[in-house]
Image (tube, rainbow, N blue to C red; front, side, top):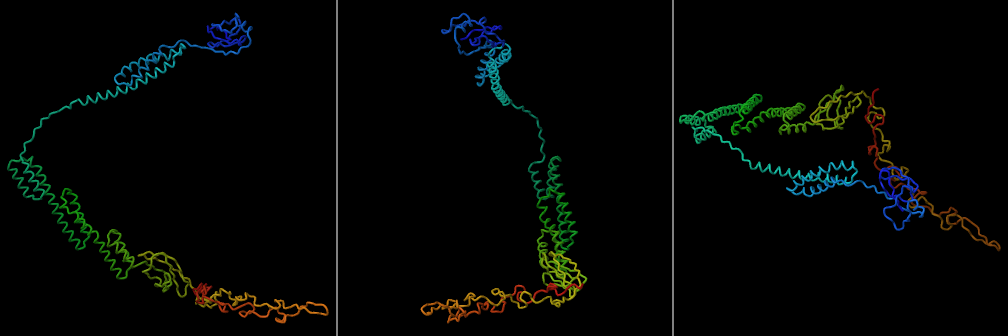
Length: 546
């Protein structure tokens, strides 16, 4: 059951009967109220099963325990009309803002909605009224409605501006032009210009004077006179170029390369000073050929000198001149081909400088000359140079040879004497084959014998009568008894075998490979020469004198 309780703040609320005698809080102001029989009021409506007690306390005494749920209704004040009006105006403005033309009215509705909705956002919290959601939604809808209106108005304004620009008429300014009086006919002018272009300058000059006599003014004749004067200058340049060309030919024929170069430089200055000279008169290809001849003429002279040096046997000078010619113009085919030919014909050079005169020089095992002399026609790359004098220790040195270059090697030879072990021969008896030139037999290992292949070393054939025992058992009758006794085999004589292997001697046979000589095949140490390098002098035949 429930009872009605009134707070001091004027708030009335229902309280369950189980809270009688307890303190509860007012849902409006929060004050604590003692629930008793004196401050309880009867409910507004009678419930059929409620006892008819006058007070809440009597009702509690007349009934047993009842389970009730306390429900508190805290109603705020009335709804805010400004918020509702702003919400309605926002809906109308948002629905009509998408239609062009009509959306101007929606802009007015949106502005009114904002005018009503913004104060509602302040009034509702202050007066504790309902409708805050309407105020917020109305303001949002009004703002969103203004965006399409602004876009449509911008588009219309740009269209109106474009239409106005299209309708504008450009201003027309009329200027009075006074045309000059032409005293030189066009045909006459064209004829004179064609004569100048064909380098018929005398005829062009006569035509200009005739036009002057016919009444042409100097103002009209001035361009033609300027072209005529320029043609005279270009004609003089052309004559100078022809004269210089003849002088260049003479200088090239006499191989005066310095004079030819100076004349060609003068021709280049003339061509640079006359850029408007026609290409037919410039003859650039001819001048280019003369320049090539002047540049390659000295190179041909150097190549000829190199050929002469090579024919005279001066290989070093020939290589140097060929290299000089190639360095002057690497693209010149003659210098490039001759440089390769010289390197191929001359090869690499070598000179061994030593105080021991007359000592022979060997390169890769071949004698090419003596010390203190230039050796040519050697292959390029790394080689072994050996200098071996009669009374000196040999010198071995590895060098790298370059085609067309002389490699210098300084040799300091050490005095030597003949080796006493090999008596100066540099060789001794081969220890591997003992001077025979043949290696030990690989089958018998030098023992001359191998196991017999027939009997496998078992050269005795057992006696088949005694079975190899040398004794046989014989039964003898002694009196009334029979006895078995052993006696010597009568066939093998008690040896146990009656014959031996006919192919060997006591299981060993002569080696079939070396036939008992112990050696077979060529010695790997001396290759059959029966001699090996001396161990004391390493095959040189000499040892240091000290």
